[in-house]
Every structure is written in C-alpha cells, then in structure tokens.
Length: 181
Ligand SMILES: [Zn+2]
Ligand SMILES: [Zn+2]
Image 1 (tube, rainbow, N blue to C red):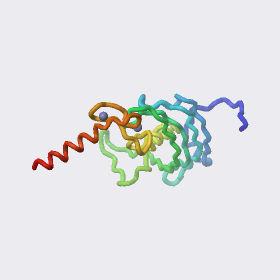
Image 2 (cartoon, protein in one colour):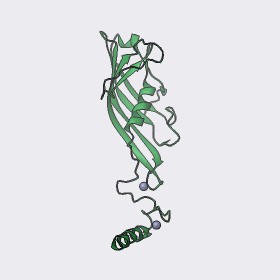
Image 3 (tube, rainbow, N blue to C red):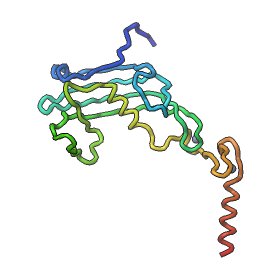
Image 4 (cartoon, rainbow, N blue to C red):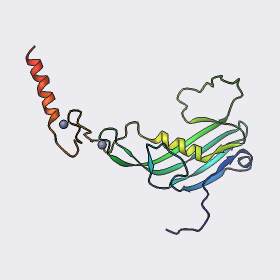
C-alpha cells in the first residue's frame, strides 16, 4: 500500500453552494479521537469513510451515500470482558432542509424513515453524520461472542473461563420444589 504525504483532512463540510455545482466525493481516514465517542467505547483504528454527497436541487434534499469502517473496543454485556467490535457499514441517507416551525413544535417524521434527517443553514458536517452512523451500527446487545456464557449470578465467576456448576444447583432446586408440590 502506498502512503501519501497529504495533510490529514479531519473535517469536511458538505456545503449546499458547492453541492449545487456538482456531487462531492469524500474519502476520509480520520485518526483515532477526531470523532468523539462515548467513553463506553475505545476507538482502536482510524475511522475510514468514503462515498458521495449530492443535492437534489428542486427540493434541496442532500443524499449522502457511502461506507464506513472502524474498530471499537467495548465491554461485553454478559461477561464484562473487553472485546473489539469491527463496524463496517454502508449507508444511504437523505437530509431535508429543517422545516420552519414554531419553537418547540414537533416535526412529523414518517414512520420507518430512519434514513431521513434534517439540516439547517449552509449544509452538513460529515463528521456528525459518521458519528451518528457508527452509533446506529452498534449491535443492541454487545457480546464478545454469540455463545458468551456471561457472569454467574450466584458466585460472580466468568463462566467462559470457569465452570462453576452453580447453574446446575439452581436447576436441581427447582426440580425438588416441583417434586414437593
Ligand atoms: Zn462476553
Ligand atoms: Zn457460579
């Protein structure tokens, strides 16, 4: 792989005025920490993103399509051990101009339109889009592996590492309770 000596561009504003001329291509490799993530996650790799942004001139809709990749280190929901989750996502998003509404008025979003967002003013900050897409791409349940056995609720040991036999005892107790009915 050839590495170039170009200065690292860490921000990119998708500006309406520029998009009116032609679609904008982006190809970003953002060093660790450029996009802030919750302290629950430790970024392990640069965030790589590429794609295009284009403007639908008649409606002022901005369509942003592309792909992003990043590795995040986080704790397993079951066993609390750290593990690395690789995020590799394609996205296809539509941003509409923010409707002019009274302050506090609710904006009706059609149900199921999770790919639709809003922008205000002169355009959109690409990093904001990427941050949101990474968070949306995270699995609801964060598991070090699908078959993680988790922490034993009785003795607190990591059941991936130690076979503590507590579960067996609980099951036995239930059976004896049934027998006593
Ligand atoms: Zn686990
Ligand atoms: Zn146990």
